[in-house]
Image (tube, rainbow, N blue to C red):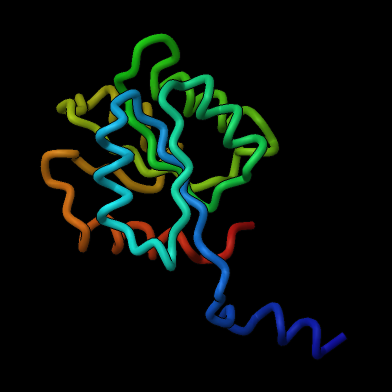
Length: 141
């Protein structure tokens, strides 16, 4: 009906619900740093210290956004991303890559259609991270 349609077209009401962010990075210090950067009253961080754990948590927790490192032992961030996009349960979760490496043109091409953001760890600031996450908070299809 018309009321239902208008409700779906209206911007979402601010929510008291926390934004669930999955952090997939083999360095525990990164999760700690991100925890310090993000307001605890607004964000819940779910740390995963390898790609397999990240995939498992993505499927079980259905995070709002995933922060993904590319270079990890075992299952790399590239592999994680490929598996996320191939799975109907996780295909639409926004992914922001956080990396310490210089991403090559070929890697950028590989990532371009599969990620919503790319941030260098060395340039990471609370303000920049919050801005990226806020862009991801629009409702997903």
